[in-house]
Amino acid sequence: MLTRTSLIVGSALMLSLSAFAEESTGPKVVFSGFLDADVAATYDKTAGQLIYQNNHEADLVANVNFSDKAVVSLGVTSYTLKSVPAGGTPVVDSVVGLTRWPSVYFDGVWASYQLKDDVKLLAGDFTVAEGVFSFYTYKRPLFYGSVLKETYFRGIGVDFKGASLYAGASDTSNVTSDVYASYTLSTEKVEVKPFVFAALDMDGAPDLKAGLTAKATLGDHSVSATYGFLKNDGLDASHTIKVEAALAFGNVSVAASAFYAITSDSAALVTPVDVPEESFYYVEPDYKFNDLLTAGSTFEFHTRAKGAKDSDLDIFPTLYVNPASNFSVAVWAGPTFYVDTKADATISLGSEVIGSF
Image (cartoon, rainbow, N blue to C red; front, side, top):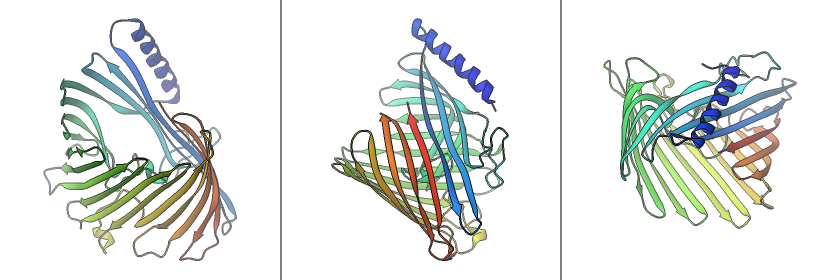
């Protein structure tokens, strides 16, 4: 675990190495990264409180190119989920257990070697995820996935044409081995990928997360669907279905996402799903005024738990400001209506910054 001070020192060292590499004939260092940070406030009339929360994910990767074929990468990350704001003193979120000002964490080191045009050998820390969402809160695979949220293990692997096979020691247990396999079949407009992830130990049947993703692209329109089969040892299987669409009609665009989980009637026998809902449906029409400004509104319907009458409808008009490529700022506000409980509606507002390089 690194502190914020060590992050600054480490970043300066990485930048110095990058500058040195550019002036020498040795390895070349290339940086890439991602930032998604937001703050939101919700007024709960029943409680008479204005409730704040923060979320962020920041990733930095240094790729050291020793040659056109050999690359070693080092990653660090920082994240919070529904953390409580605190001026200078970290406050632990009692639900999630993360602080407002978290440390920066080592995210792994991994190496690849391009043996042939269609064969790549890999070793180190692997990160795999399937059923990743493109929209809404659940778009952060670090925490969510319709089949498999980001899962980590250290081992070896190979990519051969469209097939991938990775295996290694699990990050979650010192007696568990993880295996991941997938095959991507692509044409000009259609992509299909079956996949399977298994956590193996000597004490019982493996925990399985498997499924199939299909995606079709036609011009500016794309539609994707993912089916997931989840089975932990001793528990009933769960099934998930995710469908997403991104449609564009000139200056008008529509994003949509739907998710449904089919789980055991017995809560004690449910194989866990990495989405805290039985189902949700999301649609967002937007209008692009120019390259800088886009406006629209999200419409979301959520069923939080199986068999529970706790559905809600969220309507959040949103303004997007896009000052540069791969960099945007969103400002949103709107009500949440509690369909089943008939509780007083809450009003929320917030902003989000997203950037990648």
